[in-house]
Length: 252
Image (cartoon, rainbow, N blue to C red; front, side, top):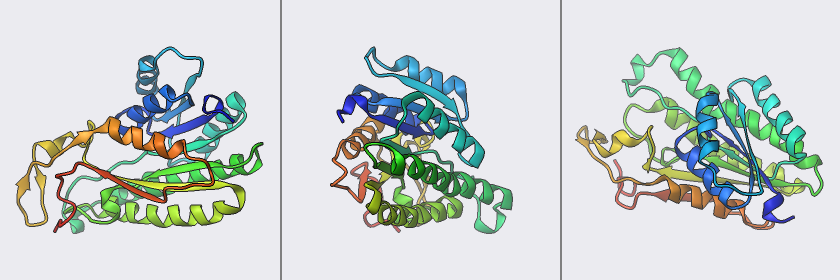
């Protein structure tokens, strides 16, 4: 199948890395299904897409709700009859408060979106990819530098991103028999509305507040496109893409 016939779902597609990736995949010839909670944001991204023969649709989705996720994949199948790439990108962080002061509801919300939501999407992707012709597909999980090294006061986000690594490994293993490849891309300091504060100054492990180097989110999107375009016989299991001078190597 040519790239032009392929279909990609991008969760958290209304802004930031999701938006940049949607534009890059669309320019690369993919039909795009943008999923997110705010239809206005999704439509704004679609308006930015260049004129091409491939198409894009927006589907309001709450990844923390299994029924909403099921509806997303059903709508994708109804429109395109297959799925080739799932970019599990939707995620949130929690306020940077002391661990003992974190509200339980906040913890649950981060787990529901970052981890459970990723599982729900992966499960639905398996159902489509195992049964389509040709079968198989690729799942790319948005991990984080926090999947390896935490920031201060980030227990919910860090815990879920560590768990994403386990989900990635299990998905890759369970997908082998069905030609389903699974990768994890760990991103550090991409310039998005969510991460822009890092350029102004964020807490460090030694208690100081320092600005951190940032990178263009388009570079992340180009990395996702590179993984997506690999044949299913080849996989980048883990990729780290980061601002070169951010405090990760040697952090803490």
